[in-house]
Amino acid sequence: MHIFAKYCTPQPPSTANSQRKSLAMLVPPEGSYLTPKGLDSWARDTNGAPFSDETKEELVEFLDVTDDGGLTFKGFLQIYQLQTESDEEETWRDLSNHGFDRTLKLVATRREDEAEDNNVQSFARLMETNGSSNP
Image 1 (cartoon, rainbow, N blue to C red):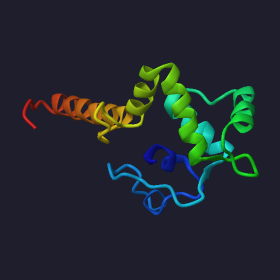
Image 2: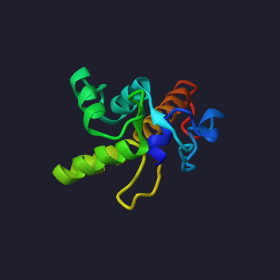
Image 3: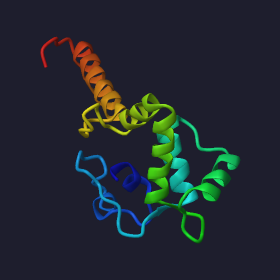
């Protein structure tokens, strides 16, 4: 639900209020769905690239969607069910990309880890430039 909620329309109240970076679990509003833009964002964050037009057409044809073709939460679960049945490790990689560990606990995402590492490295360089080795 948390992953779907990050990209759905309408957005959950906590996401809409710019609290998206916190580690609080998001819950999608009743009747929410993924627009084509939300689907592309989710695919990009999950796999590094949006789905092809052909893949999007297959999703609309075979999965649960709204009358306008928006992917419902049920359809989103169908994607992960099919994927897990064929390649469980791919699903674990997806979950990891969205900040979950192997116990399904929400932890810092890789992007947050990279940002933290960059901040630490920048601080260390600043301290070296100023001639101080202790922060």
